[in-house]
Length: 292
Image 1 (tube, rainbow, N blue to C red):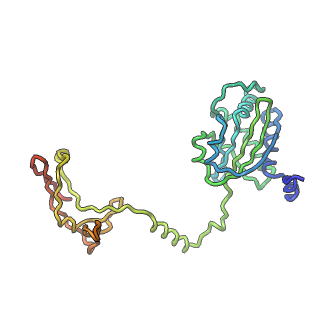
Image 2 (cartoon, one colour):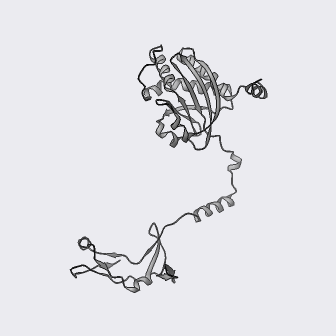
Image 3 (cartoon, rainbow, N blue to C red):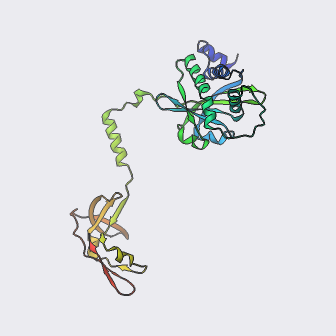
């Protein structure tokens, strides 16, 4: 006796999810296409969304599926199978599979939308515990990994056959399960402590600023390589420590300690502006600015 039969017996005869998916594909696709659909095989597993695009056959139709709460899944239809479905919906018959391969279009997705929703509705009606999904949009392979959730996702697949030249494996990628609400509830005190810890652990860029000066633009434009700004020693006593947004953290002294550059906080009083610094260029001309 096979494992699938044993599992069905343990569930009181209720079919496994992959069996429900296969049955829904057979019935819903068959009715919507008005054409017999044969299920050759079915199965289930888990897959990481980021790995799926690398293993897709060129021209695979990727349909994004939406859950009511905003979580996302996907339905993947291989090119020969989707081409056969489009032919049946437009011409009412299957043609030879020697048609040049092409990328799926929004028109293809719009044609298959009612069929896809029919399959999803059939699964939800057959099992009240099944996640109810709806057709969302056509998705490009390059965007798949960015849109889909991370981590291992449940996958159900069915090998379907419309005719001799139109067959393939349809894959249903389920959204991640709903989080346990009980585990999500956090004591307010713990939440505040966690928030404080996360904020305090954030990385901040620090800048040591000696002085800021303003000069006329025309004089700034006259600066050239080789010009020197003479910084008076007292400016080192009035250095400001700032974070990346420009906010001042404190006032201190810039110097050396143990052979390394160091910044020492002083009394924190606001520094007096330093006098204008002269700029000597190669011609000996002096350019003076005004302190901020």
